[in-house]
Length: 312
Image (cartoon, rainbow, N blue to C red; front, side):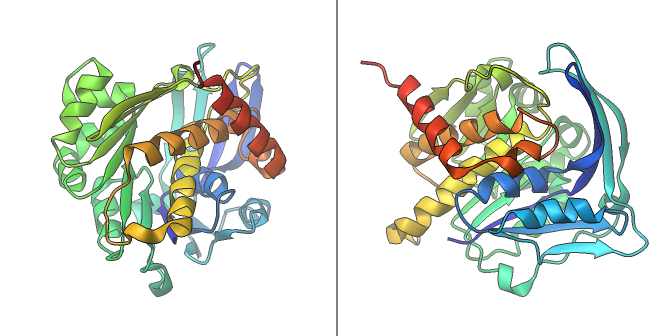
């Protein structure tokens, strides 16, 4: 089934306890699409300035199932830039700078041939932009959004409207508390269900993730990584692995074509795929590890992770 992601293409400078990377490819749309592409075709809707290096465009084109025809390169505009420094506990980081660039301009146009997309992921950006993008996909079967503390604090009214329209929300445990005022992530997620979505995924970094669904409650650990080089994009690659699996499963089993949302069982399997994808992403800076990733490596780690979860 057609999968589309709307979000950012960025140029990042990152400092971690393992080292640093200067002006590398980043952005929520980029990480998501690279991860999702291992499961099947994925369409990008995003904008960048003409300062985006050719090598970064080459990285996006390296993934053969990414359709980048919805990526606008705007002459005279600047690409979104972000700089961050991670603490020894890499669940915590400081933002060194943010340069909005094209994000301060009009959102990108959606190609007409993308409008039949049935699986839609609204990666992190202003909720008013996310809501406008959502309306462009009338055939959607599953629409999931990401958000962050900035929008919870500054665009709450627009975010509330978005939550009433999407099927799922992905956010971290601090954002869940900020959004609801509830410290317990399960209680916070159940409160978010009352706002509209049929499921919520709460990311807990090295402690895994929670799935709170109208049909049940699930929890998965993180994959036990031996080395974490750069956590940037881990959440987006997690979401890409999750949504890529769901879109591929929908293509194989399209029987409930009119049904909105996704079942608890399908989502729990999708979270496992997202977890494994994120475990590769953190092994190197930028998209270096995903670019080098082989299908047999991905399948082997997924089998290992699935084996870890079986209790006899």
